[in-house]
Length: 347
Image: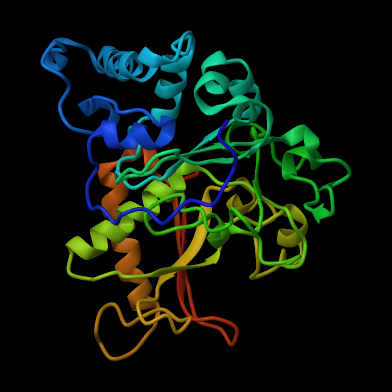
């Protein structure tokens, strides 16, 4: 049985490696790696150029599943569909190739026998972070979520969250509707790398510091977009060694404390796990760096980050969302808001 644990920091790789290295971590098995999963070309027996995009993904998943399940009787049942659903539009590791975790709804995990057979019984029954049994260059953790229904009277256990806009009737449907559930974050798993540069703890609501476990809403497309922005900045001559997350997920009760003129939006995307306020902080002094090298730090440096966001959204339309420029105050320096709401927004 695989038990939840804190993984080691993964290797810092600029591009995806073979899916064999990817899934050896996720499932503890050596696999052959297909292009459709963001890896090296498929085995010679598979002619990807003769398949539609959907069929290519299916064939890629089928090939890796066959190798994975060879020594696990009955494990293939439902696993191909699970891998395909985890892969998403950008592949198993995202467009960036730098995702290090995939999040699975509890109802989905329970209905797929292969989850228990490959990961152990607890992976399907107990929400948590499940890490590999063997070493690999590019780890991928499986995170099973706590069902949304576990929230009672605005909290789970001692952790206060409040009510979401769709529960209050102020916003509902689409990206403002109900989501699958929460990541349970503990002192033991908070340092789990969910992408090359970011850990679970980076996105926690900044309150209730003494309360554990904490609960987090986080979406993989946000992580993918942030990684792509870092890569784009590097490519355009702005080296990035560290990005600080000033604000990631906000529980509704925390978000409500700042709602008002010039403050937070009542229906803020931060409550849905697909938004983050970030800044490049290579010297780790808690403030945005002088990105345009003009000798000062101001919104023009934020503009360098927004320009990178623009280029990423043109290249990957499925990651389109908001980008907002925020000036310095007495409490913080300039920063950029980035989200993946599904429609373009600028402010």
